[in-house]
Image (cartoon, rainbow, N blue to C red; front, side):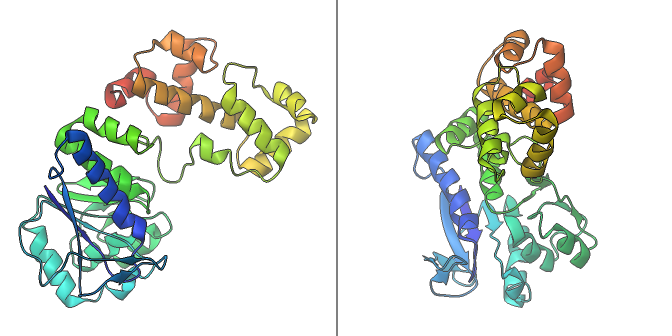
Length: 317
C-alpha cells in the first residue's frame, strides 16, 4: 500500500515521521518491506524546513507525483494557514479525494482539507487548541474537540501531533487486524487505544504535573503501590501533612483530588491489564486495589463509560 504524506514548509515533523514509523514497523512485523511504502509529497520542489528547523527531503511534488495512492494524509504546521490559499494544492487534493481509498489529516492539517472543501458535513478531529477556530472558520464541519481521531466514511482526521501515530496504528489495525496493531504498539511503546480523549492526561503523565517534590513523591508512591491503602488519611500520613493541608495542596498541584488521581491510576493499570491478559475480574480488582469486582466495575464506568467486560470485548488482544 502506498501511503502519501503531504507536507509543506514549517511542517510539524512528528506529523510526518510519527505515522511513517508506524507504517514502517508494521511492514517489519509483517516481514514485507513493501507492505507499506511511505512517500512525502510537497506543493513545491526542494527540501522542507520543518517547524523545529530540521530539514525533510521530499519524494515528489503535487505536479511530479505519479502512481496510485492508497492513503493520503495531510500533515499539520504552526503556519498551516500559509498554504490554505494555495489553489493548485486545493485542486490536487480534490482530485486525489476521488481516487484514494482513504484521505485524512494529522493535527492542523485538517485546515488544508477544509480549505479544499473536503470537510463540509463531516465529523472531524484536530488539535484541541485549534478546534474552536476550525469550527468557526468552517461552520459546516462538525468538529469533535476531544477525539484522538475520527473516521467519517473514508475520511480520517486526528488530534494534535502524536495523535497521528494513534491514527496510523488504527489504519494498520483496519488493514491487518488487531494482533499486528498490538505488536506494533508494543514495539513503539504506545497504547493500542488511548483511554479517554485528548483533553485527558494519562495517570503517568499527570504524575509529572506537581511542582512540589512531596506531592510528586506521593504520586510516584501511588503508581507503585496500587494494592496499598491509598486513602487521603494514609497518603497524608505518608506525606507528613495534615489531611486538610494535603488534600488542598494535592489538588492545587495536580489539578485533581487525591481520590480522583488514585482512581485514574488504578483504572489505567486495569485497562492495560485487560488489553494484555485474560485475568478475571476478581483477580484484576485485587491487583489494582479494589476490594471486589463491583467497585472496579463502577470505577470503570465513571472513567471510561463502559464496564470491564465491554472494554475487554472492544480492546483486548
